[in-house]
Length: 423
Ligand code: TTP
Ligand code: MG
Image 1 (tube, rainbow, N blue to C red):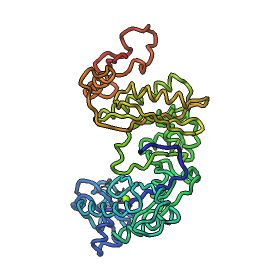
Image 2: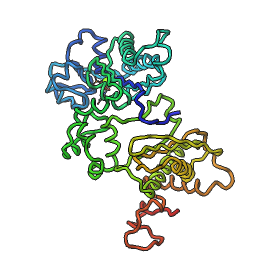
Image 3: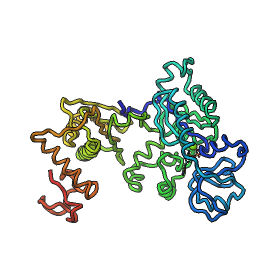
């Protein structure tokens, strides 16, 4: 089952990313191109061409050419480069060769793109080695073997990051490209990240980078040190999550292909740790509704509900409960999650809550008297499909009317999009 666990420093996660992938394949197949600036993408048409660069060999990158650059601009920067149109079927074939190699090391392979994957090798370190070889003594030895196996079978190089989490492994694999291997020792995550510019953090795009720079936050260490409440005022609900990442805390599991549908869940990190019961309850209600909606979208019903709970000291627990009858109703998810919450919530403030549904079976509407809560959820799905998410919401999730008594008219505009369903 795929469920996030507590931040676990015993995990060994690899991020593998092929170097200059399309260009490297072309240089491999045409030795005369080796050592030359090779640009794969649109036809430059002597500088008048439209379209963008898919990738550039490391030789071309020295001229400042890179992915997504307009091809006309690449031509200006590197007129003597070799320009090639992409051969997607060839790259796809090489990609599947690479993934075959990866899967010999572990079945826990999560593809990210055509040339990139996460591997959780924690268990394979304990098991026998690939193809009858003795097991690698360390994750680092395994990573070296894996790089060798890729090179041996494809004549291409990959860069690998090894760490205790996906995010840190991903940042590490980018550090020493091409043909790099960067190992971040367990416990050194925050120290490794601290000096790096914030844009290196996985999940910080150009816009977020701009906002952070404006706040005087330049390095990942700056981000980790900033007071969470102050950051949340500027960045909103992402602040807590981003800061966890900046501190090297990322317990997202590697989700092997085909396992993705085994659980459906959602989490929320509070901007500031909280013990406000009304807020905690409201968050669980929202999570339950969101998860139930996704379960219904998949045409499923779930028997197991799992609560993920992290307190202000980062102690994380997951508690599950399996019910006799599978359901896809937000109310039922909430009721279970709330009971589990009551069982784990103590004196400490709460940092994160998550709800996961699993134990799926196909959804079959009861022929007779489907429960009203399921019916209501279906009505809501239909309305949201038409008018957008949030078009209907629970009355208990509405902000209290500021100056009015409680009547049947919800606050705010009364167009169709904002008409609420009282419950
Ligand atoms: P990347 O792994 O991002 O780039 P890369 O492998 O070429 O270079 P690096 O050594 O930095 O990893 O992407 C993999 C392939 O995906 C790349 O070779 C071409 C394609 N691609 C595009 O077509 N457009 C893009 O904008 C990017 C980023 C990649
Ligand atoms: Mg790559």
